[in-house]
Image 1 (spheres, rainbow, N blue to C red):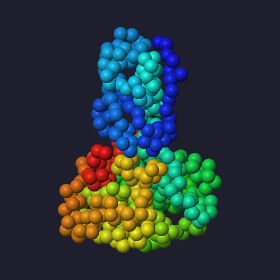
Image 2 (image 1 turned 30 degrees about the vertical axis):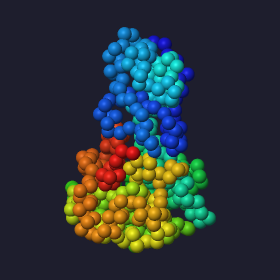
Image 3 (image 1 turned 60 degrees about the vertical axis):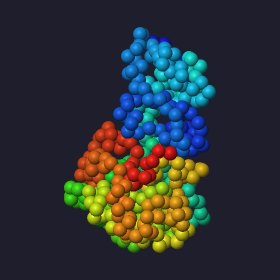
Image 4 (image 1 turned 180 degrees about the horizontal axis):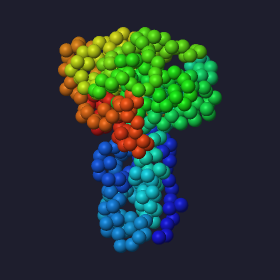
Length: 405
């Protein structure tokens, strides 16, 4: 088989993120199986036209072993009126190999096409470190995992760094802090996560640093088993000080019983899974939605008493459209009181809010039970299983947050 794949352009995950942030218009040819495509896909601020055709359906019509040639032949037969001639096309598959061959075949037909380097695996594991606040005594970096809608934070001052809600690929944080001359001194989780595997315990073990979260989340809510990971209990209103970094733990049960929001230097609220940009967190992932909903109401009501100028930095986003023009996720509490549907319902009172919560719950992802077990140290998956558990975007907000844009 002859191939010109080495000359076919590849788009890196970082380049893709830049295109999405800029709102660039392009077309996606997704060659994964239909169930994989249905579970998660590349999303932008605005709808991206896409064709999902499993690669094996293309190869079923193959008459030779020249895969690029067969993709070109298939395109002539079936895609003349589907693939745009006047727009950039991004071909994607699971690992980037098949899409590279498909892109080569389409390139031979004169299409403006590239392959996503590393495929959806690479996109799923891509992290984007962005400055969200830079002051004389504090820098706050937002760490965006765009494929999953997960957000974590690096707080930096005086050469020290605190990692809040670290995700499981801890080398991302180690490389970033080393490159920026920062020494990681602590890892903090806002709660026992269900949608992703935390990197807190791994960071603590590797660097011999404390790992903090509330002890109520030191028990698996469904198994009722104590955590098998080492951690330092963090209590309501406790203040941690790391040089110029002051972190106050606000205990806000509701999403979990140990849920915490961190108020940093009295100005930045790392809200974790409580207040998002467009919605609020669901209360049912511990299997007690009816019991936890009134608790959630009281916690959110307390957060709403903070000054309107408090900057809310959430633990997740549900859709890229929630980002600001720079692709960052954060907003003042005053603005969120007016635009966030869940917070507006809080202001309507407990009974109304509880009814709203319980009528707005998305499907419960069964893998979330095992992810909580992993984060409690009760289950130790290999890399393949860990990736499988994390497949797809998070579903930690209420269903209104996942409406199509």
